[in-house]
Length: 254
Length: 235
Image (cartoon, rainbow over all chains, first blue to last red; front, top):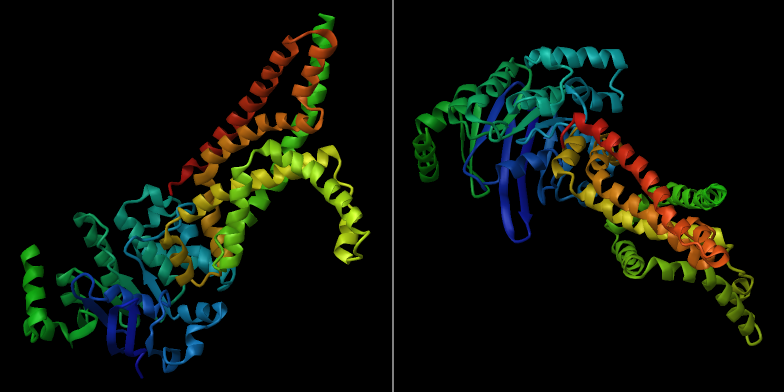
């Protein structure tokens, strides 16, 4: 059974069709990269999965359970409490980190599990400390976000998302806001999460990284999935003209 | 020397009323302003429109005029309703006919609280709307409720951002309390003016400046301390 099944997702903002019939599925432990030029709808897709936007049409199913059905009006008018529990199937790491500036690293990670009462304070703190170690920031545990580099902030954001144990962890261009010399440390952490049981979706412009870490790759253009396949298929033998053009543009930049 | 002591004591007496008015206004206007700001940001259009019109009226007319309206308005309405009782026995009119108006100090307090709540609400609104959307979204995807997001994530960031404009407004409030004398509330300026009429002395009026300066000096130091305290984070 697939962890995630997305079918026929459509989303428009006013007259602009951002997503036009997106379907894909993901098995447990797989890493899916979504690539494509700016404005192709990658971020909107992630936001629909996390219910930061509501798809106009289509369904989202996690672990065989239907979470969202765009044709069902009730889905769009879900109660706030219902959305909150459904969101927890997904975690998301934002491009701009969005850490809480007034809390130190430890408190940033502990805040949500504490408020959601995921166990007692001690267990939550222990888990948070383990996660901080996992992203290599044990010495920054009491620092505030403004005292950290962009790369370090993003690693805290990853730990914060992991603290709620999501079924699927999403990354929305996790390195786009970073200085080039800082992207490596973040990619290294994401790579280290690929242990076999965490399922991830990564929207990225880092082609080398996508090729190396992904099990599947989606290439999006103008709101549709233009190509879908393994990294070898996508990078080794691109079929569509758009994909070829995109790849040559990306390579030029390197 | 004796007069100086007497004047000081007299002014202190008036200053007591000034400080009382200042403190009580803050106590009620700070939370009321927050409620006003939520109303003006409400997604329910009639509420936000009504709130905006109300804020426009309060900010668009002199506080001095508002004092007079709050003090004399209800009594006048009561008298007018009493006249109307001759031709109608409408329950609302009957109720209005029982209005006598407020005492002087409560009337001043009501006018000040409403006026300052409107100014505070606009400062709050500016602060709340300046918080990046990403902060709300980060809270949402972590499963927090709207209330948790506001109180645990947004509020302290808002407070940090609004301290400079708030301290400005609060220092203005200290000086605005002098308007209370319009409806004969015995605050410090009034107590100094008494000396002009009774003893031909004008220096007590000048002397009141010292009281305002010291009080505002203390407030300024206090605000600087709070600002320093929130210096540990950026955002």
